[in-house]
Image 1 (cartoon, rainbow, N blue to C red):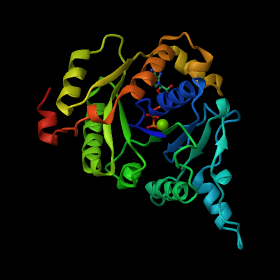
Image 2 (image 1 turned 135 degrees about the vertical axis):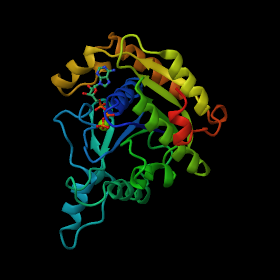
Image 3 (image 1 turned 60 degrees about the vertical axis):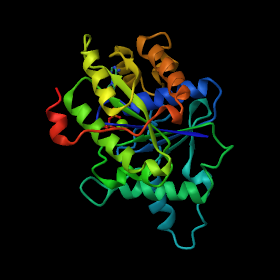
Length: 273
Ligand SMILES: Nc1ncnc2c1ncn2[C@@H]1O[C@H](COP(=O)(O)OP(=O)(O)OP(=O)(O)O)[C@@H](O)[C@H]1O
Ligand SMILES: [Mg+2]
């Protein structure tokens, strides 16, 4: 099983890209586990007919709220999505109450106890993680040794690069757990972005750009139509084509080709452009 973790600044396109990658791998007959690690619990919404699924945290309080409950089963945690993708959402507390990272940690512990991530069950595990790794909770997949291949989604905007630089710091911190940075995905906002600047940023981090994904109205159309990913709904769209190529590129990257990232300190970051 290969665990791929998608990180990136809030709103950058992580869930869109992650769900379309999962659908692409599943269409290629891989057995896929898709895990949303974000209290917003919308990562799997395009993969499951019928919309939002019950989150781990909701199940946890429902099942453990009942006295004499049965121990949790794998089937309690996973929802079968389209294309035979097994889906889970960590969920989290009500906004402004408690620690959202705790839900992710608890869910990953439950995965471990129930052998969900044992070799042979899935070909690919895709984790879509909220970008704010300043909160240790969101580094849980790195810290607890579930993450292997980290992919960071960026755009051509400065703050997206700032978040990527921070995420690279936490990859460095947890490298001894087997975590490595496979590369960056440039999910472009602009028709004519400064690709050279993005390439230079990747070189400073000691990594690569895995794909330039175009802005594409097919993404919005799929989102409003509900219930299907772009690769299923509009397979010939520029977005779908670039996701298919990204899916293959991510699989080809090997750990030995991924040196420890070399993120900048904040002063150097702001002085670099
Ligand atoms: N390549 C693209 N072309 C057009 N629209 C896009 C593209 N990528 C993302 N979007 C749109 O941007 C919005 C944010 O995307 P998404 O929810 O995937 O981001 P996110 O990083 O998961 O956000 P969050 O951090 O809030 O979870 C969505 O409405 C999505 O449709
Ligand atoms: Mg998201």
